[in-house]
Length: 85
Image (cartoon, rainbow, N blue to C red; front, side, top):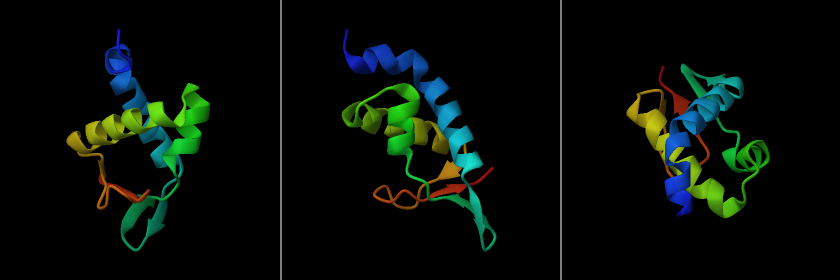
């Protein structure tokens, strides 16, 4: 079984945990709540993953949160996440 298949059922779980992390580390800038805290170190430690594994999971979790309308990521190369809900 490929890693992606093993992680499929947990994507929503990762998204929930990532959203909680984003909320806990958000600050107010102007009228926006934003999170500038990098997800990589936290996800590696929290989920016992290596950097390669985190990349796909982080992307999937952020896309899920964007789909739900909870966050917006203006630049995929930046750590900046804007909370929208």
